[in-house]
Image (cartoon, rainbow, N blue to C red; front, side, top):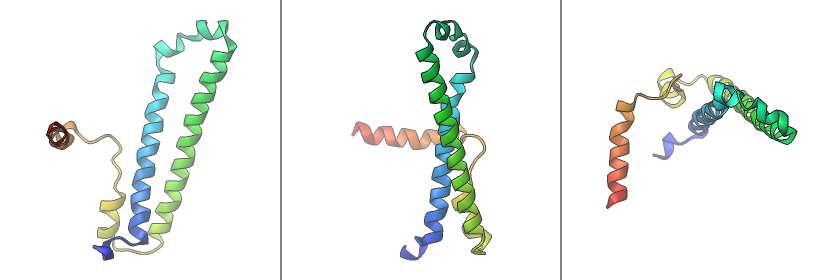
Length: 118
């Protein structure tokens, strides 16, 4: 087991974790672009503090997303520069463009809920 956990493995796991964080930040930004949220402009015009806070939240999420993806790109470059065999890189650095299908996650969730009930 110790042979599996080397610096490259930690880098690859960090890479995946960073991509998860980027996805969370992207999802958190979505409400700011929805029509119902944009209709709040009427309220924002009444209270400029609200406008400032909302813009700050959105900018924070944008910056978080940017920094996280930059760091992930650095890790990817570093790992690839080590010339590891592809079969070692791909399972650890594979990141889906979309969430896993629910059919993949459902059994895990059911198992978790059963353990919580006991």
